[in-house]
Length: 451
Image 1 (tube, one colour):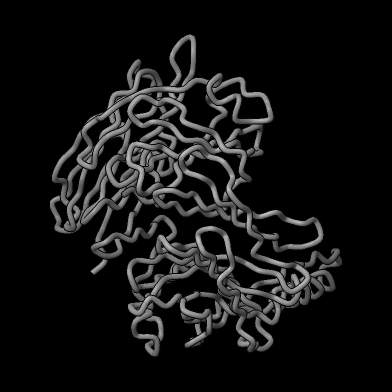
Image 2 (cartoon, one colour; image 1 turned 60 degrees about the horizontal axis):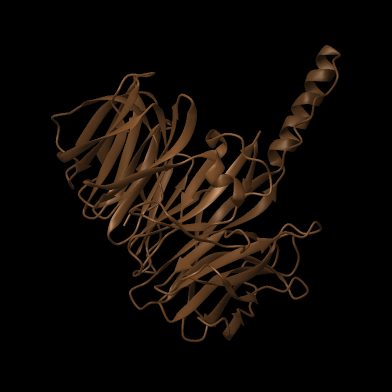
């Protein structure tokens, strides 16, 4: 199954590197017209190999093994000047969507292939096909962006969330289902836009957020959609602003229940952070809603990064503890005053307030009753910018500035350790065989496995 795109590169050609556990290719733009995706026990790269403005655009998919050596490849030819939009898939098929311009029309070209890369079907949609999905007018297919929703239990059904670009504004449209063999529209849904989604063989469950104008935190609800026809079966509210403000980072299902988890705050300033877990049945009934009663962070505020599960099936929430820090603003103001006194100029003040992050938090909650069973806080930094969380199995990888730290939730008493340091022209990718770094330098991308 294809995960969301982790890294995109525009590739003009491939140059294999002889050193073990590396793979390189030429690149003039690291963010256009290609992708690198973990796939099974390896990964694949897909990129453009034809020259620009050619009548047919050729993309090559190269499969790499755990040593980052190519083991197979396949080419896809798309009529016109094409741009890779997105990829997705289910248990049986992999989907690729391209924007393509050919006179006199522009279109979205879909390629459906098996896990080995062999093409199963191709079809396209024009602006007229997407127009009924939006309340605003659609004039060109170039305005359309797509996201494939994850799908399980229904191979051959393509679930798609469309977006319409109007200037710099992105408007979500009605999500829909297509037959992946011929592109036939199966149904459209009137459900609100999903910020998170889970799918079973019969249901689509989406988390929707409605942001009130007076609050930083939205109000959440879960919508249950019939997968057979896209109809809305039930809506269940999962937050109550009068009792606290919630940030949801967990939206998971085991096929029998739906779990939500995250942080809850008394006010919208993110002070006095607590943890919560809500469990729903798949018919939308609430099984329990548990909020940790203790204030764990003292005077610190909390930035929730994400979550993962330990070997016992417990949920582990990962967060950063931080305080507002005005030291740089004060120092800059003092320096400006001294400078203006010496040279007779006016004072320019640095008015920014930093987020001083000095600890990372791992809160373990039981899926049986939502109780907090373990709480660990480790000193870090201090950092002045929020990090991002990547997960693979039981490992949490925290990337902040150039530092990359790793924490094993199955060894909760062991503090996070430095895994590697990445440069500003590098990106980190997690795979089933470990983390790799992608480096862009001198018009070349090099993938390297971290030992």
